[in-house]
Image (cartoon, rainbow over all chains, first blue to last red; front, side, top):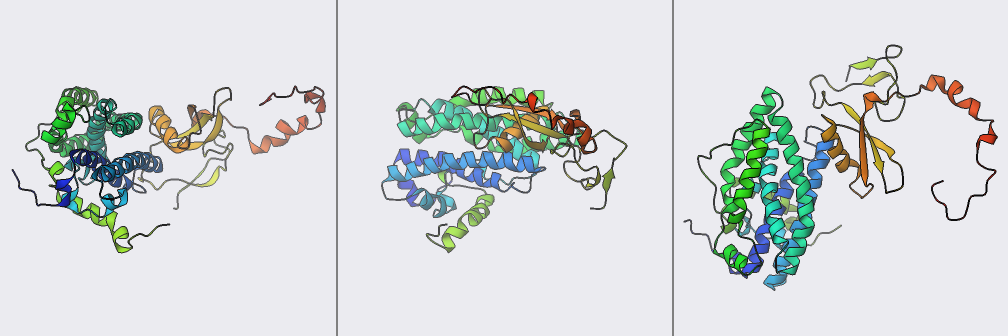
Length: 260
Length: 128
């Protein structure tokens, strides 16, 4: 057990923390996908990944705004996105890892969107009206994200020798970060008991069978993770998140209140 | 950008390029070995709403038909432009040649009796 540094995010009401976790996942991954714009193999893929990123950013805005509202201290979505430090971010580590090559990004997207689809599907029945609304709208977006990643995984896996090698390496790169997605904690379990949140541990079997099916069709093997990542929900992150936040936040911090 | 293609007289005109009959000389190709060199061109047709026909909206590159459909969704229907998409390999389209313009189209110019201008169009009929 790693002792987290004390920070204001520790004292949030459970519902605010929960919204922050889901919002941070979406926000950080949206930024990573945005990095592909003008760098993807084709302009069509720039647009596809950019669209997916914008869907996620839309989800993040609703969830961060809600977290601020529940906290009741007057923090806006911008305050939460731009004025928190690394240790106050509650995203899983999977979404912050570097893009790598196109195959790593596709593997990450396949893993995350399959998880997020199961999560949002279950969250659509939440007794919390806002969470249910966000999830019901987003599940259609994520359905497409998952399809996009699946299509590419199949083509790269079952493509040329080189594309197969890279896709397999991509899946192996992201695999250690998968366990964290399904690691529920007391906060999540309590909210699940109240019918507000979802116990992510319950989503794992469906995720496993879907991923196994896609990887098998793509002629890829299911990796065995030699280690697993932990701690994102408690503010423990990889080195990569600091650099990501520096880029994402510097404009807002250099020019507070700037708008156009 | 030194390599160009010159197919005048050696190939039928196609819709490749996305604008009907296209210039066939001095057309820059991708850099040899550059990205996307193997991806064929697809023409995209969108039905904007039920009751209308599919219209040509543009073209894109994709490795196969399935990805062409998804790319078309991302590139051409981001602002709710459509309810249905067709993608067709550009190479599968045979286009008329600008050189044949006179023979193809001019003879229709003076045949006004082919226009339905002698009928009254009922009020409220759209898309006629």
